[in-house]
Length: 287
Image (cartoon, rainbow, N blue to C red):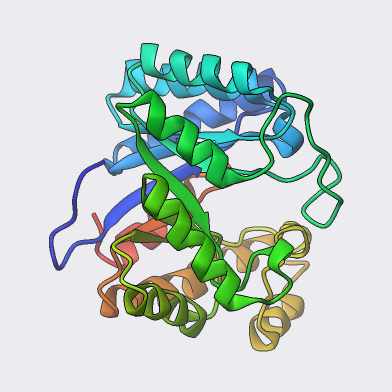
């Protein structure tokens, strides 16, 4: 991935593999629009429970081959044996994808559901980081949670210690879950620095374009929506255009705050839509 200058955070976007042909058309339309902004990298997710693994591999490979934009491919422990995970790493390497985001992944029932081990598989992202590091030639990223990992039940010290262990195993950067509270981000970055970590922390930002979708993914990921923000969206929930504009405004404000904190990078959870992210990037002068 490209390195930022002191005054210029990296700009990146996240996409998810679509479920059908229409969704794939929309995905590539968004890619074409966002590619004009020259993002530093694009990441491609797995679906819940690893359900879109094959599409993730195919789309990540296509992005790398045909857009020239560096691609970060997600890799999770869900539903795969160690042998299958090693095979996926080999597929990424063959597709000239050199950066992965190593995650445990959510159980098929969602983040709050019990974790079900896959026979012959892995149970923790740390194991996945270790595997990828031993395969060699990968830059390895991990997830970070300013509002706390759902599985840590509010144990902030545990979250920090987990990131430190992943760094020791070979991770060099972390991309955060989206958040709305700048103080939560600052607390995490400060705690890691005090612990001697050199992990590069990329801040995840969600441009809200749909109130119901915001509520659902916030509940799934354990991200609290501040009362004042929830109330602002509730007042205009039936006006789609107003929701998009408010989402752009709130995300632009957060990004400006992050840039004032010399954030290393800003990563947009695009939900496979381009216009809101494009507007925010231009608002804050990233491109």
